[in-house]
Image (cartoon, rainbow, N blue to C red; front, top):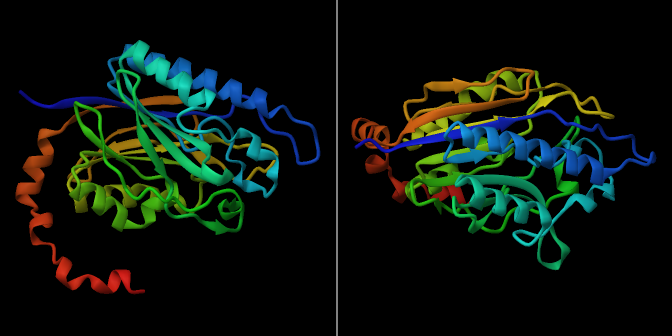
Length: 294
């Protein structure tokens, strides 16, 4: 009997736009609106049979790294004890759907991270992934101002019906972590992101399929949509997609609309592909020492 996992990605625009720095804006209102919007979309995905649903990077607000100000720290929550993850745990248990929930996390010692909570179909908290690679570049990707580099490594989460890994946005430019997760049993790698139009359009279509081919697993890539105020950094161009272990895109969202992208992932294909492309067998870790010396 085939092992088929029905999986969904949610791409969404901000419901309530932020005000410029120095102008009073209800960040709580923005957060509440985004959480409510995603809860409704998760319910729709679950009604369509989704077994696991992945949300976009920092799903509960805009991509606030377009500016550098401490006002956004109020959005950070503890994992798993904060209200957003607790709500998602209850929702997962109610619907019987596993969730990947990327949020702004405040951790030990009041350190801040770009993180994702992973929740099982029974509502159990399975663990956290913290974004390992933190960009800081113009225009508008000022992430080192907000996030400490992740310190939890590259865990693989066992959902019972499949094993998954999580990479967050910029992480996808670094193949090493994806390799670690693949070697440790990940069958699906989820990559929640915030990517704007431009040169990224081309890279968006080749990097994740390349990771899928190199590691022989499925990849689900999520990107938000719309232009966010007040920064107008650029258009987040959506096009969330799943690709299979051969690098073929098997489901894809639009550029500019809220959307649930769903695909049936035949996990038996992983074994088939790895037998025909035995990259893990033919690796030469004895020659790769220079990777960790530089």
